[in-house]
Image 1 (cartoon, one colour):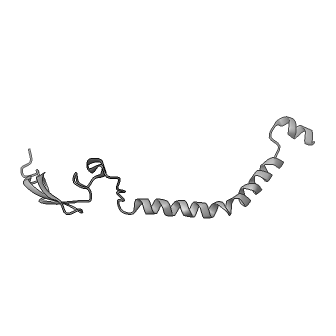
Image 2: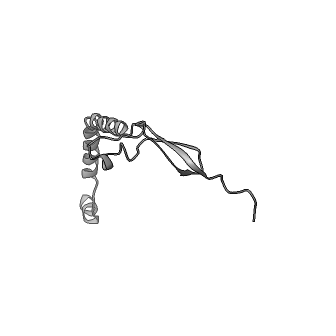
Image 3: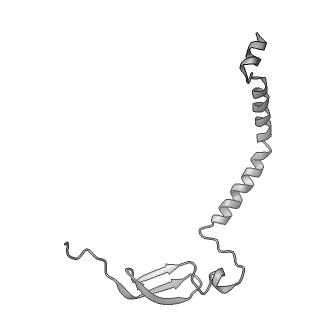
Length: 99
């Protein structure tokens, strides 16, 4: 077996939350930083707070807004596609009927 391949395990690793709460645990890293802990997570606290990680909710809302703006432009394109499809024969009988 290879020697010295295992990481160092710290029994008193310090965990710091974005809310300011700190506690110790065991980890291979001496210091950890987390965004949500048991003191500020809505599931544990019971309060209805919106946890937004890295602005994901803002990004989603921005995409939804762009989609609504594009929806006003798209019906014209879709209408042209539908009209084009309506003029194309769909069955062999329709093809032979046009001859």
